Image: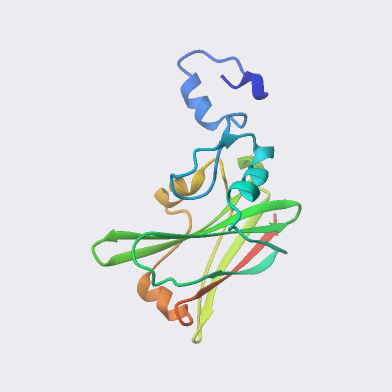
Amino acid sequence: QYATTGCSLTLHHTEKPEHEDICQYRPYSCPCPGASCKWQGSLEAVMSHLMHAHKSITTLQGEDIVFLATDINLPGAVDWVMMQSCFGHHFMLVLEKQEKYEGHQQFFAIVLLIGTRKQAENFAYRLELNGNRRRLTWEATPRSIHDGVGAVIQNSDCLIFDTAVAHLFADNGNLGINVTISTC
């Protein structure tokens, strides 16, 4: 199906749907959380799309940065998004707050590579909350934007914490997450 964008595989029709889900040549969807943006395009066009259509996303340079989520006490489902640029790649940092059931909210902190799944395997990341003589750390391999925020949360392959934990580390309703990207 994606021959025009570079896929050269020829498969039996029973094998096609499974391959199409993971084909690196399928169009990329906008990686921003929330369903409002319907953009699709090539991997090379993703950063240009983000810079033009999602101007509010800031980018920090360097492998060791602080992702500051402000007003974490805002009610309901909220997303904080920023970009980190290092090692010649861009990483999307997402903190998503969801209401799991009445009065119980969970935070999901995610790192996605603006790149393929294979490229993502070359990196590791560490998310760290620090404060009040406490430290909470999560280390993992970033996921590709091909996987998307929803799939990462569904698989619990991210740093997950509840409101009580968030408040242990927050300062006046703002939560600073230290993000470190490294190469493998």
